Length: 373
Image 1 (cartoon, rainbow, N blue to C red):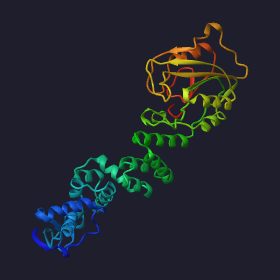
Image 2 (image 1 turned 60 degrees about the vertical axis):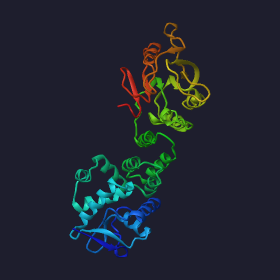
Image 3 (image 1 turned 30 degrees about the vertical axis):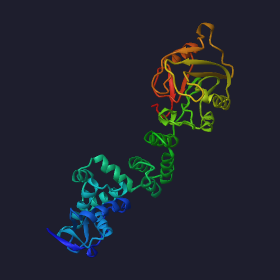
Image 4 (image 1 turned 180 degrees about the vertical axis):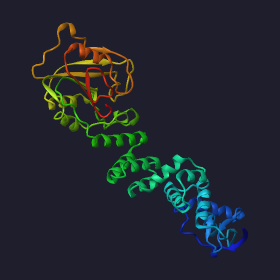
């Protein structure tokens, strides 16, 4: 290895340089330093005066008007070794963009026949970081552009592209929704991917007829500004028309009673669902919680359980009629009080029970929903 002062106009940029974007302001600031003190750290070149590392310094030196700059001449490096040196310098100093890193790491892996684990060890980064970056390679161009514009994180872009690699148009649609969001983008990614899974997954309804239906629909709240507190951040939401059309698939008995959970903002929509399913509203119960929630006009502390019927199903006998107010602590998000199951079972002890959007199994009940198995 030799160190020499080389005329700056004899040096050449390498087209295989992983960095494609150079910050003009930072180059100018570096040039201002070189005007006063010159270059302290030599750049690296090969025997043909092609730059291996230090292109930023070379560009700044040209801008500063320097005629010669110190260069380390590395004569016998292979293309793989040159790329390795560029990656190590750039990753741990003035950072490459994530897309530049991804392209360069892919080239390094191919040139040196490395595993992802080998590449992580060589570059002193985690296996997860390598996997995340390589996922970007397969991202559709509109998603890469969102990453470059810093409207979506590389990790989110990588996951969306990987999960929907056979559906690039859907991946772009989801990425754009995430880019427009102002907070909690990570949760939004998971929810949108899960909603996609829900729509694709054919969840078979039970074949029997049921005379007692219990449902906690995943209402969609389009107005939520704080996504962390909105329903979709916890389970896949459904549009009103989707909920209404679901009634065509539900195996209602001719004589049937429906218990339907609804929150205050969705009360009007709930009556649309009841009518579209062929039921007639009868009454409601109110669950009063121990903790206060959010709300735009008032802070909510209760939820409503609507009761509706179809056909000639009878009310429960007087001894099995409960007070209309249920007082119970709030559990994990969207989980309803356990006592409601017990109340329904006492009201209709011989019923055939179906829980829609069920999450867990319960004796004597049949469940249906994405979380139910």
